[in-house]
Length: 58
Image (cartoon, rainbow, N blue to C red; front, side, top):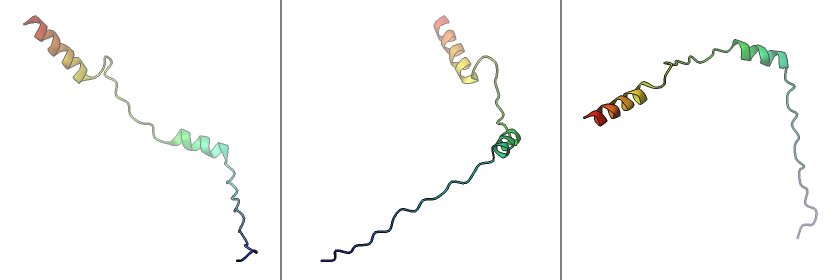
């Protein structure tokens, strides 16, 4: 039985240093998503409410 087992130690990787100003510039220059707001909610929700009110009237 072998008693002289050699184990490799773990490798330590250094994280790259971040340039904070470059990160801020990249965030400012990226395109923003277009958000459409109809003001009162979703059209299908409003349509369901209208249909329910019509059904009560009948």
